Image 1: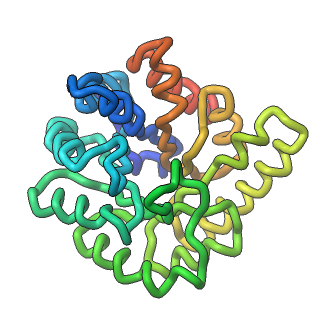
Image 2 (image 1 turned 120 degrees about the vertical axis):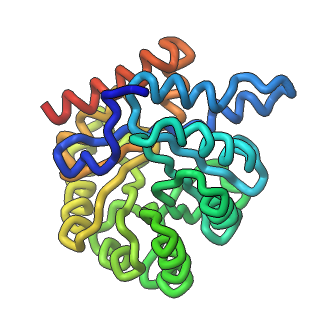
Image 3 (image 1 turned 180 degrees about the vertical axis):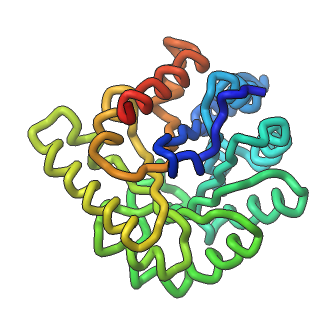
Length: 265
């Protein structure tokens, strides 16, 4: 067990948690029938290197994470009680079945992130909209919270939308950061970051916790965390796994943690 592990709740004390998304490990594995690379081995290496959580996004077509991966990781995380398990996906597709199965098995799951992606969508590219999505989301948010799970809603960086997330019963929002990633290093960076800062402040004013994710990487992560207040967790997969092809998983995770620490030094 890594004694340096902290949970996402430590963000309240100034530390942003790093949750490693393992979708791309599973995507590579699924191209052959050899079982390699191992999703659970990748999770173990990331946890040993100090990440505070594991994220997966099981999709109905099982293009990357499969149902057995969700369970296998739950079994693994029993040995890492300080780490958080975040399951994300569309609650109107297969997400709720995965979550209910973990709870029924008595396996750890701490956070459920609702994402409004379509079945054939290559990757998440927009957030929930309020009041349009309120009526259908609220019962599922309530069900997850009744199971003792934290609920985060994937949201575009629009301050006016944060109240709807709170009314729906969410505990947190995850700010969709692709627009920031595209603007980083361009003349538009400051203006885009200002929008994220305003959205974060609006969420905090509603009593919501804050996560962030999508296209964050070692080049843009520190700047984002310095500018946007209160980020409790970042979920990073594509860039982190790409970096790991050169650096290895352990050194990559340590480098992302260094990015976080630089922002909060």
